[in-house]
Image 1 (cartoon, each protein chain N blue to C red):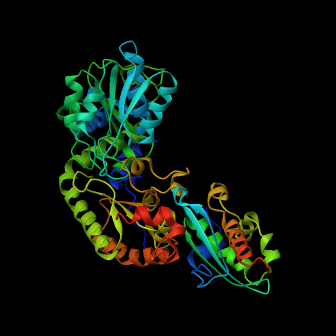
Image 2: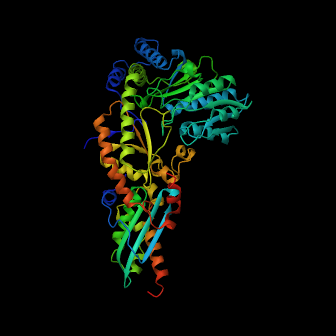
Image 3: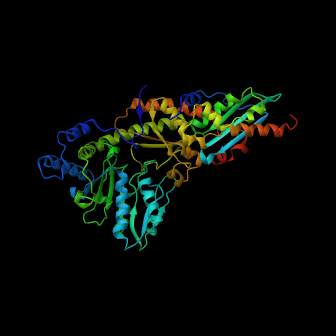
Length: 124
Length: 402
């Protein structure tokens, strides 16, 4: 049911953890639907220099979280803001149809983290 | 990689001796038992032998056994057929909030058609309150439908006491015994049931065969209309090979249950004790004692069930989960919901259901492999050891009750 890339990111997730004194933190999802994703950012001169995630959720939720951190790392804020959930799913060679809605929120979590960064750094 | 199968409440393999007994009925003895000629006569004896084998296991008469295609058909037949036959006496059904969808969704279908249904609640162990059951009976009540054993948690309901209440109030009693037959003793006389449903593939017979016990003389409108098979109770050409298989599986279950249930329970208890010793912050779902000998349902706080199942699957271990992700809906298990299990714990619930083929070495392997998997997923979870209380209000606060 899952692609090899999903299984790879689920088994060996990239960038798991938290960032102490992160420049931005974003969280999406809720416990009742079984998925919570939290993204931590370090931003330097408008470039994402470190990104980490913590996720409570199914295999797809963990794999998309891992993938979005890989895609965002090294990108500018502007570039990261145009990353979409669909692009994350595509980078994983697709997700099962029933996962597209509930577990494919990783780009939203990234955008929340960027929003938090921008609110905390209005002059950046 | 070794395959370890701990999902016997989902289905079981066909037993080798059952398969052997079935094989001649596909080609050599292919007749239709309703035919009067030699080909039909060759198989009608096998059909009636199987009927007697099923009847013996549950202390019924062979004439009270009707073969059906699956447990869901039997449940639909008992509920829809009773309400149709007795509709002029009343339109009220009593069931429980934790039934299998075959019963729950049949009741919901009837509700849309003007019938009323009481869904009895359960307590935190998944147990019913019989005072509430009796209080729910009204002059309109024509059917009580309550399962023998819960498929998700293994909790056993006090069926004989429920049967006595139904008899006292002259209300028909249907029991979905799909998870019980073959695992624990089932006696339709002692339990005072009017209908009882069995599914073949839960006890080593093939998928696609089941049986319903209908107490002699009980009015029931058929679900399938057509030929005169099964004394006009159920039309359709008999699935002879599978019926033969179900018969033998029931006979073997009767011979072996006492011994095997002790052996399976010992393994289940070993798994339960091993996991509780090795993994902190886990919760048993289901009754601590009134429970099927093969079933263990536990929640691992802070992690989600599907990701745990996937990790176990990668190690060759097959189990199941009550998480929304595995049920195909957005809500976690309705059974755990009815038991007031906190929602993230419900998402993390994992069911291990053992069978006669499991070994001590397999159980020890699971006990060894599971704790690091749980820890890996917990280390990834924002709910675990979370420092920032505000970001996980749902998770932390309610989970602290553990």
